[in-house]
Length: 425
Image 1 (cartoon, rainbow, N blue to C red):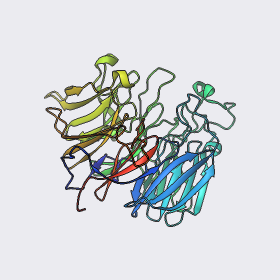
Image 2 (image 1 turned 90 degrees about the vertical axis):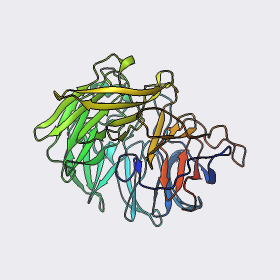
Image 3 (image 1 turned 45 degrees about the vertical axis):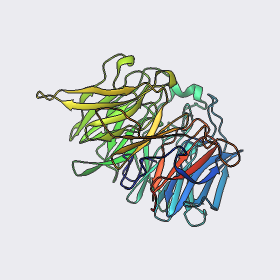
Image 4 (image 1 turned 180 degrees about the vertical axis):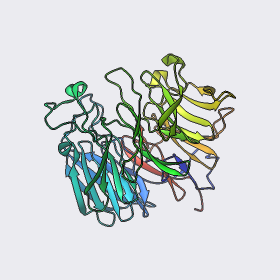
């Protein structure tokens, strides 16, 4: 979802920097079902998780050709109360010989990579009495050593809360993050008395130590991913009821940046033995805030943050923001440049470039330059036709692009498209 290091960066080299009038070479395309999550590449396979009819389906493709190797599905009951999308929001997670999927209604399933057979499964919404959130389950799990960490956010089983309309009265029950044995599914740890959000948890190495970072519904939670110990929390959430924390936190050096798009913007903290030490809060009014990612992934390069900032299309721009401290240790932000493209973008850093995908299907390559914005190459995927005369990408494209072994994978609402980003790979 955010790459093997959870930082939206690829170590591959040799990318094409000039795409010509026809754009990148298309290797294969495949139709998708209903869903927002992007697929993942592992073991020479592309794993795509979507909804078809009344079932959630995991499809395993050969990564270089698109050939379907196997598929697995299970029934699902979920209806988006806001009418956006009834499919899964989470990306599959592949570890060794297993692939994990977390469905929109809380079904957590472990399958074999080789043939899709079910190895274990748990229904977390029922087990932990999860009160329906605005858009179902939406935070992808993560594997750490022998554990599978999942954002659950359950409530006491004595609660009489059954629908999303009851979310304002939901109470947490100590299961913000839950760890299972990745091989057996056995419950191992629980941490955090908070509800769930839509921001994928990450593990980052900070000052030589691995730290789990979860942007839960109520704010920023950090803990030791080995066992859930040493939890620290800072409240950070809009006062607006119908708001969500949806962008994964990022690390700038040894600092953590968490941000939202509805009201309060960004927060920068330093992790200490005693908890979080706030260094910077975006105290400006929303229009002038520095970092306001809705669900898009900020990309950190040095002290610079490249981010699509804004809640909706009319007020969205793409910008570069630097965070620095003065001689007195006071941290502040500086917007280096801003492009009012009104197209929320997700992206990947590769070979000192940014590969950005807009929700309307615009794919761009630009230098990761904090001083100026320039576009080296561009494709309008929603305007380019496949062999069946359908667009390569039908909006919205909300999933970050994926790069593996020189191939670039992009999904829209209608299909996934695989293109050649690195020739002679």
